[in-house]
Image 1 (cartoon, rainbow, N blue to C red):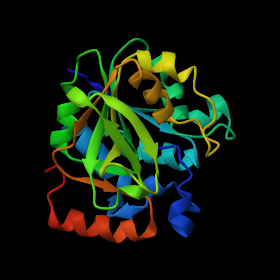
Image 2 (cartoon, one colour):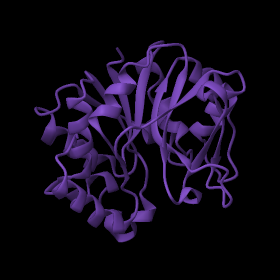
Image 3 (tube, helix red, strand yellow):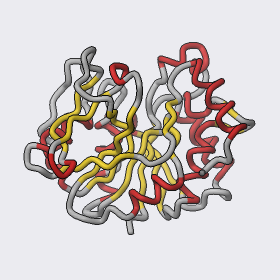
Image 4 (tube, rainbow, N blue to C red):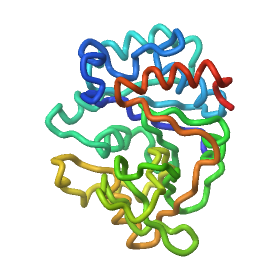
Length: 245
């Protein structure tokens, strides 16, 4: 069973506009608590026993959050990617590199800190102890706004297309992963993407060429928390649903 999970929470949250000017978007309140609290509650209740959060933007606010909820989440620690690499190196690959010396040669799960995942799906990723890396897929009606997954036989990943205006699939990358140490071999070969960032998806695409990555679909909900309109949607979801179902 995989008991270690990394939460990527260092982003600037520019899509949240004014809501994230004085705090990371992960700390915007929904349902009376910072969004990050709801994510952490599910991660903890799923049974993960080492939770590593990667911070960056307005990290002092994140440190305050950690101190406030340390008793509730005793297996929780943090590392600041900006302190390690500076603010000029950006992208989803940077938090992964920030925990390299912490995870060492272990397998571990990872999730985006601005997405909400169910207990069932988090628990499923704990069981993926084979030699493959995994990407959590999720089917949506509007895939062009997301990274879309192209998979072949046996759900082996072929590639992930970032925000393709003409997607060949409605299966998107949910931002839930299970990694083996091989991800770091691929990460060393990744350069800047066309967006000027270092992308996890580029590292996964390199491993996919060696048939080292599989896709497993999420069975329950997946919610993004990236734009101002998502605050109302998330609040309504939390009211209508018992968190964790």
